[in-house]
Image (cartoon, rainbow, N blue to C red; front, side):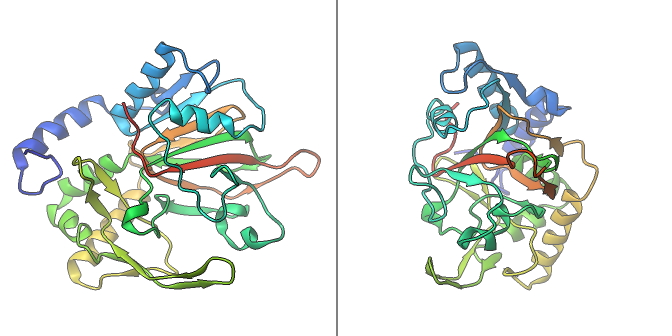
Length: 290
């Protein structure tokens, strides 16, 4: 069966590449869809979001729903076949995480729960293969007084640009031991064993999955020349002015629906006179059904 992500199938790749570039959004506005109620989309709203996901593995919805209600991301995801929540140990009882600043407790030791910047990554890069994060909904309840901007990049577009530069970059990043997250011992979570795996991989249906973090601590890259060159090329891409990197400042009622695309977050600060920044994050083992 042909697959554009097979390095040996240059014909399928050429066809896919042509279509991918032809339909690539030129601005973040082309990924935004206004919806009345994310919990119960109209057929037109659903179709518009699905079309964005087909183009670039992500869509941004904007609504007037500012309530602190985890049903918003959960019910939105369910409308796209997302049901298998990754109920990690820092998530709430319903499997959805509150992304806000925690001044005490275990969460304060993890960057997502601080006001510090987060480098480029895909979610769950430290998870074992059976718990790969395929999709995510990130819903904004309250934004920060300053900062907290996200950069977004379709992982398929990153693959395309790297493969165009040098197909050996892709070969290196598809090695089973390309990236290793060392063992971690946590007093609450126990021992998380070392986890090695590829950056780019294919699921059972041939869809492209990406596992990546730009962090430099608690990560070990394979030390062959090809991998070092590939990682450097990816780092250059993510720090470039590529037109395929979009910036999004989430406002209350807005959210990101995506197939775990590359993203980062700038540092932010809250206004002590107002409630702090709050986003809900729902991470799924499913891929968006469009």
